[in-house]
Image (cartoon, rainbow, N blue to C red; front, side, top):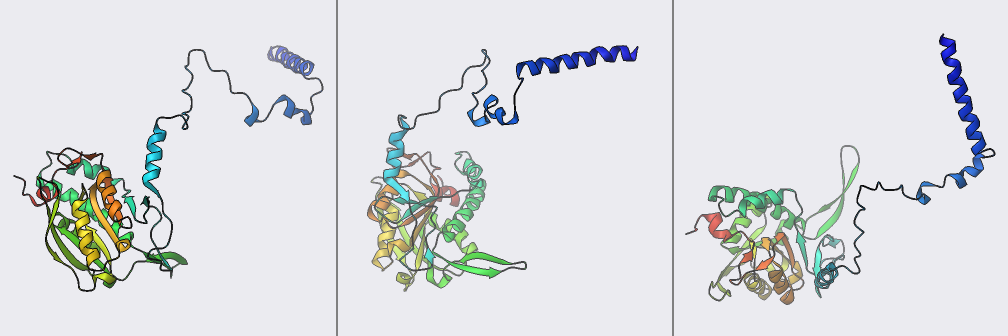
Length: 314
């Protein structure tokens, strides 16, 4: 009985083979390419009638985003070169450069930024949580600002080989200048990372009625003209306060290309204003917001940073 069941199956198999030979009687291995074209030349399989076709690829040349892209390219370009013309010292080439200038805008890249901003931007966040999360964010910003200074290549030996690294300028050639009062919060985080740098202070207040800054006080190291400067202010709105602080530094002999301006939140208007007057100043920011409202406040912003950090909100 078992052999009786097997024999019909063998017969069916032989019949299938003979049928296949009848369809392709003389096919050789060399002819297979003509019968089965390579994958790159095969036509795509037919799409089931019930499934919609995918949307066409966007044509960038006819896209409405071209105007935005063109404006962005007009305002910035990629920089790659030496800092201050000194061999071996390089300004990091991951920055975006202002038009007609050597300064750049570098936006902090870290997955921590978004959730930290979610806390400090929230209008109902209490003072304690605001200060905690703002300090964590400014610690990242401080390290990024320090790393944005010119570096010198250096090869070191590890336990298992060599490592191509880089070194920062000596702390004696760097000065951190805070714009009082909000800038002092950022200064504290920077000094935790690099406590041996010198410190300067500039006290500038913005007239809330005119949105224009007024200089009240400055105290800078005597040899600041020979130093790289990390200028600190958490907010860059109109740029008026920053420009007045930069003018104070330039008046003391500081070269604008040696200034790195650190801020937590900035906006396009402030960046454009600073780079219009000081195109060689480098800006390191955590995020660039949409712009300014009628009162010259950053939108969406986070409110008055100094009041929320030092708990002086009325």
